[in-house]
Image (cartoon, rainbow, N blue to C red):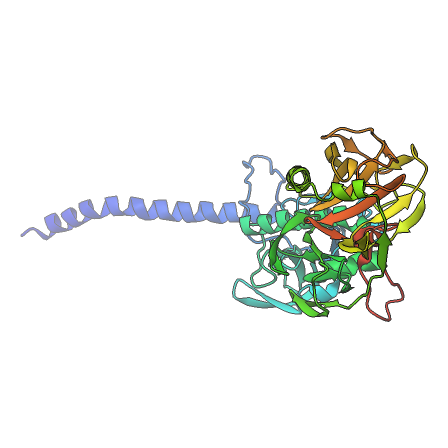
Amino acid sequence: MNPDGFRHRRRGRSRPRLLPLLGLSLAAAGAAVLAAVLVREPVGSVTPGVESVTALSTDQPARREALEFRMTDPDHGWIRYADGVRTTSDGGITWTDSASVPADPAWGAAEGQELPGPEELPAVKSLQFQARDYAVKQVQFVSPELGWALVQDEGELGGGLLVTGDGGRSWQREVTQPVRDAIRRAKLELQGRLKEAPLYASAEAARLVFRSEWLVMPETAVPGGAVLIRHTKPGSVYWNGRTYRLEPYGAGYFTYLPIGMDVKPGRYPIGDKMLTVTSKKYPSQYLEVTEEMNRMRQDTKRIAADQAKINKARSVSQPEFLAGGPYILPVEGRLTTPYGHTRYVNGKFSGAHLAVDLAAPEGTPVQAANEGVVVLADSLYLTGNSIYLDHGMGLFSQYAHLSKLQVQTGDRVKKGDIIGLVGTTGFSTGPHLHFAFWAHNVQVDPNLFFGRSPFHWLSLPEGSGTEVR
C-alpha cells in the first residue's frame, strides 16, 4: 500500500472535524463576552453597540423588612415596613403602597362594636408553613378562624403576611378560596354584631354577649314571666313541653321562652346555662257584675269563634325584632288590676288575670307600646274593640275594650302612634285599657317590658361594675 496515499486519505478525513471544534470555541468566547457585559452593566442600562438584555424574574420575593401590621376588619389592613407602608382593602388579596398608616374605619369607633376580645381567639407563638417552623413576631385574628401572622424569616417571604382560614391549623401565603370563605363569614359576623350591639344597655353587656355561646336573659324568672334566649348557632330549645325555634338576628339566634303559670320552681338547663324559676304568689281579686254581664261569659260558641280568629292572627310572627328600644306604657291611667291576680266573679273562680287594667276617661288616646305590625283590629265579643300588634319573634301586645279603632289589620305602626281610644266595650265594668303581652301565645307579665327592652334583661356578672336590668 502506498503510505503517502494512506497519509493523504487521513488528512482528507480530518479537515472537516476541525470546523465543529472551531465553532465551539467561538461560541464559548461569545458566551464569555456576553457574560462580561451582563456582569459589568447594571440591569436596565444600555451599552452602545450591544443589544440590551432583560433578566427573567424568579419566584424568590424581594427582601423587605416588615415592622408591624394591623387588620382593622376582615377586608382592610396595613403593613408598615422600614421603608414605607402597604395597605389592603380586600383581605390581603392585593396590597398597594401608601404614604402613611391609614386611620381605623369609622365602624370601630362606637362602643361595643369592636372585634372579638383576645381571650376567645387563638394564641399563636409559632407556626409551620411549607414544612418549616417559623417564630411569630405578630399575629392577629379577627374571628376564631380568620387570622394573619408576621413571622421571623430570612427573606424568603419578602416581608409579607401569612393568613389562615381555619384557626391556625394551616397557613397560606396567598388568599386561597377557603380563606376567602373565612373572610366572607367574618364579614357577615361583624355586620351582625354591628346590628345587634346597640340593642344592649352597654358596651360591656355587648362584649359579654358576643363571648357567650348561650345566654338566658334574665337567668332568674317567676311563673308568668318570660326570658330571652340567645345562641351562637341555629337550632331549637325544648321547654315546658314545647319546642321553640331559634331565629337568626344580628350575630345570634333567638327565641322568647314564656314561663307559664304552671311552671314549678326549680333550676332548668338551657344549653350550657341554667334558668332559675322562683315561686311567686299573686293576690286575689273579687268582682261583682250584673247577671246580664255574667251571662256573656257563658256564650262559649261566640267566644270560641273569636278565639279562632285571635289564634290565626297570632299564628305567624315576623322572624325579627321589630320593636326598637324600650316599651312604653300605652296610656296614662290608674292601675285597677295588676298582672297575675286570681280573679273571682260573683264569688266564683274565673281564672288568673294575665294582663294589666289601666283606668282612664273614655276617649283617652291609646299609643302603640312599640313598633310592630297590626295583625288584628276587630270588634270581639268579650274584649270589645281589640288590637293585636306583632313585635316580632313571637311577641304580641294586646289592647282591649277600646271605644274606637284607629288602625287596620296590616298597618305598620311606630312606638307612640295613636292606635285607638279608651272605652268600655265587651265584658267591661268601666272605661279602661286591658293591656297584655303574649310570647308564643302564652301571656306574660307586661311589667317586664315597660321602660326597657328584652335586651336589657341581661345581668352582668358580679364585680363588673354595671348591672343591666
